[in-house]
Image 1 (cartoon, helix red, strand yellow):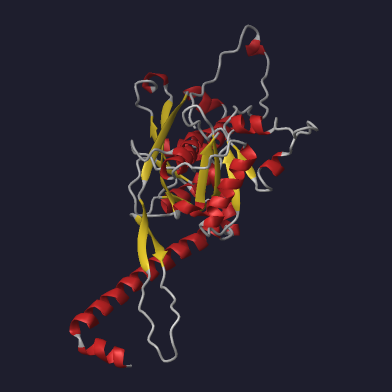
Image 2 (tube, rainbow, N blue to C red):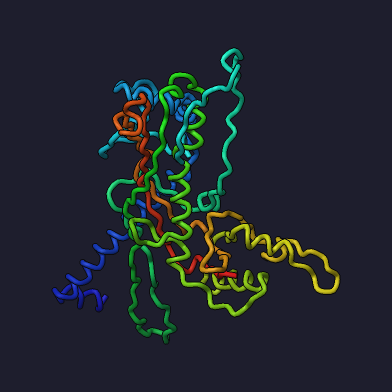
Length: 375
């Protein structure tokens, strides 16, 4: 009580205390906002919205946008995604799309015009596996403006005191992790005949292919983005390579796990590496017996994801271990598609160029939540 009276009677101390309380209130408010965004992101999708999206047609959205008359669920989704932001074309939900390539209808060979053609399922191309989102990265969608994630860097200190003794004052300290939209873009070309002849195949191509290069680029940036040239900073750039002197993969894996445990990192941990490392892992044999050691033993029972999205570092290949919920992926838009029938490549042919844009960013809550070593 005496200390409280001293503060109240000292205007400078009172003002300092009031300022500290206001700053803490702001930090708490930001933390609550982020928690709410995460809660919404992790919540089960609304059943009625899922039913709506099952009737969504990417081909219809693009065709009607080209004609300037969006309708139905495609119009509703565009209006919802375009709220509060400037769009250059039609906005398509990211869940509807996952790259870009020229699509044309070939000319049949001799005799082909006399035979009816039935279309089966689209034979897709081989793709690298997208990794980080499936490993449990925290996804924040529907963002606007810049986003600061407040971070508690240190807490108060406990002191042992004598009976009736005074304790020592200490305080929490904060900093922040900032996110801002960065734009990744790709384009594809559609011929006039493809749009006229085969709406079913067009729908499959657009859903499976158009947005994939955007998702692929974001996934790779989360792993190894340089933080320069307008791209996010990924794990392999933001986190310094672990200093372990071990050379055996099993021993390296043990040291990476320990690095997180030593820093009191909570959460489920998992490994991410590429096919080159796994090729070596599958050849590791027990000395003497020659028994092939299972990968689960080498990685000490932790889950392992293999993706060629993990690039080589110099001439070596990384093994990354992390508590992946500490990787935050933020989306500021759906996939914004600009339709351009006037491009020189297509104007005289009646086709259309599709330019796709995605605004997103990547951040790491705690650097201590990730450790990696190239082998």
